[in-house]
Amino acid sequence: MIKKITNSFLLAFQNIYSHFFHTILSLLGIVIGVASLVSILSLIDGMEEYAQEQITNTTSLKAIVVQSETNNTINGVSVRKDSVKYLTYPDFKRLLSSLSHPAKGYLFQRKAKEVTYYTLKTAAYNTGTNYIDSSAVVLHGRKLTSADLENGKEIGVITEALANSLAKQRPIEHLIGKKIEAGEQSLEIVGIIQSKRVPGPEVFYPITLINAKELNTTPPYAFIEADHVIHVNALRDEIDAWLKKRFADEHAFSVKSNEIRAKQAAQGFFLFRLVMGLIVGISVIVGGIGVMNVLLISVTERTSEIGVRKAVGASKGDIILQFLSESITISLLGSFVGLVIGILATLAIIPIIRSLTQAPFQAAFTLNTLVIISTIAVVVGIVFGTYPALRASKLDPVEAIRRE
Image (cartoon, rainbow, N blue to C red):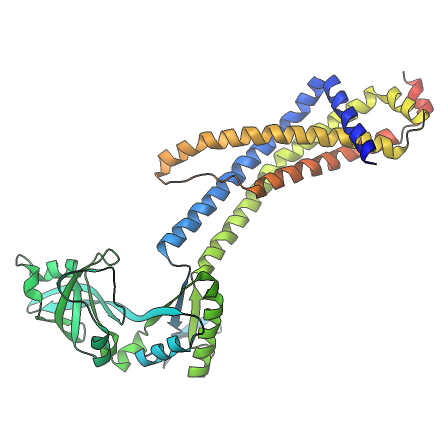
C-alpha cells in the first residue's frame, strides 16, 4: 500500500511537470489565499502576545480582588442595597490566615475628597488602607507602620504632589507634624513620600479610622496576591467559600482574578482569528476550484491514458488515488509557496506597523499556524480533487481508448 501511494505521488509530480503552466495558474489562488492566511494569523498571534504582555505588566495575574456587592438586580433593574456586607480589617486578617497557600494582600477604600490645610483647600484621593508601599521613597518623615494600623492613630502620609499643593512656596518638609482635614478625617501628617505607583495627590491613613457608616456607603476592596499563579484558582475558591460561610450570604461579595482578563483577551483574539480566517479562507476555496479545474482538464487530456491503465488492470481505487495524489501535491506546493510569501510579506509589514503605532509589536509565527496551513492544503487537495478523481475512475476503458 505504501509503495502504491509513493508511486502515485511520483506519477503526480511527472504529470504536474508535464502540465507546468496549467499547474502554475491553478496554484495562484492557493498561493494568494495561504499567504493572506499566514499574514493574518501571524499578526493576530503577535497581537495576542502583545496584549498578554501588557496585561501582565499592568496587572498581576496572581491577584485576586474581593469586592462588596452594593446592588441587587430585581426584574433587570439594579437597586442599591439598604445594608451592605463588607470586610473589616480584623475580618481581612482572619481571611488571610485561613488560606491554605501563602498569600499577601491589603484592604483599601479610595475616594476623591476635599483636603483642607488651614484656609487652603484642594482635592486629593483619600485612601484608607493597611498597605505599606515598600517601593515608595520617603522624602520626609516616615511611612505608615503596622502599629499605626493596629492602634488606629489619626495620622496620614501624603504624596509629594499633594505636599506641593499644600505648601505652595514654602518647603514641603514644614508640613510634617501639621494637621489636615481629609474628608471627615482629621490627620496629622507624619510622612511625605514619592511613589511611581501614585504620582498624583493622595493621602494615606489607617483603614481602621474609617467608621462603619462610611464603610457601608463605600465598602473597601480587598486585594490578595498568591505566591504563584498556579494557586490562584484554588485560593479564589477558598476565599469565596470563606466569605459565604462568614457572612451567610452567597451574593454579598464578588471574587475575581485578573486571570479572567487574560482569558477574555484570549477568547476575543480567538474569535477575531476565526472570523478573519473564514474571510481569507474564501481565497483558498477559490484556489481549490482552480485545482479542480486543472484536474478536470487533465482528465479530458488523459482520457486514453486512463483507458489503457484500466484495460491493463488498474482499479477504480488506483485511478482515484492517482488524481487525489496530484490534487494534494498541487495544494501542498501552493501552500508552501504561499507560506513563504506570507512570512516575507508579514516581515515587511511589521516595520510599518511599528512606525505608525510606536509600539514594540512583533508578529508571531507559531506551530499552530504551520499545522493549520498543512491541514488546509491536504483538505483542499482531497475536497477539490475528489470530483475529478471520481470522474476519471468512472470512465469506460473501451470508450476512453477510442477517444485517442
